[in-house]
Image (tube, rainbow, N blue to C red):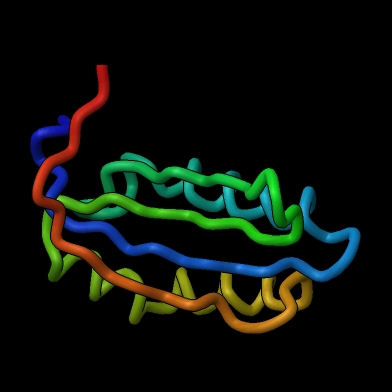
Length: 105
């Protein structure tokens, strides 16, 4: 449920020239495969910039900070990062947040 979402991890990434579409697909496939399989993982938002096409942002949503921290310090995410790294100009810039309010209608 959306009301269970309490935490978010945001990644700002910049793709190498000609690699954006592949990076977006890899990220979406990765998170889609984790929905319902990873404890505490509620979903994600993946967006690309209209003004700066190589720039993409993905935000994952979690119901517990401990689950989020455990996941991003774990092997599954580390292996994925190694696969997507060649498509990026640099490692993703990562920020974590506690959500005050989250609503969709």
